[in-house]
Length: 401
Image (cartoon, rainbow, N blue to C red; front, side, top):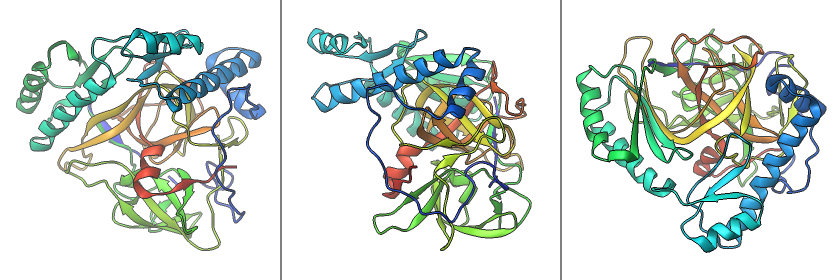
């Protein structure tokens, strides 16, 4: 399975349009009470799920309420070893003992005691990452923790390659903690013109999609993006006019990378606190950046495929990206995975769950085709850089509306 680059700033009233309006400060976490959602968000979710708007609101409310109950439990001292939303929409929490499980169930959530749990699986993931650092596992598409299945899943594109065989031999040491999935496609970072990005890069033809606005403790405004979109500190342009310049990227071609980066927004410009949907529905306000659980619904806006949706499949996923220009493969760690469809030009684009910002497009299967503004599309997939990790690393606060 090969994964591809995809890059774009927006034009006109498109995704995360840049406006000179002042940005407001971050708000409080989502309440456990029923949420007030924009009609456009409700319409979009209902259409993509094939349900009526009342059912869409009910789903959003339930996910937000369960997320808040879990946050309350952890603040109260409950030790959690991973959580996920099951097929029925119930947030299931991994616990270590009967007393903890009872507290979880008393809060209206499901509980289980897994054979391994997220912490143990993260340790397996870390050892596989270390192995990949020593030798890029060509032929291995991705590997990451599947909390619901209680395994580290390894996706294999070409098991015949020597590097893939070595990686699989290393993975076999962990026994049933690792599950191998064959038939993966080759992957690459998602850029139409590497490494440039509509955010056009340096005023050229390459482009990426805008992510989220954030600010430093001193009030300096930044665009948070996929790292490969701002590698090399390019100037970023909207409709031919510069609005920002890349300042930091953790992405390095051919290296063990993290696909996060930031660009300083020029004075007089700002990143809107709404996600555009490319005409699918109206703009979606960003109310916070609380990370959604595995299994939660999520949508992304991008310059190539528009507004597409799906569910979160996992976090802390490591992938092997191929270079479309024939360069070395690159191992990228710390990604989220989803069933959202993306294409070339979508990199950096904004992922949102309900009204909570989640991350920016990193990559997806090479040659994947999406229906423009197609909502949920069966059999598709993509990877995103979690926003919360980028904000924490760079010491930034998300701008919300």
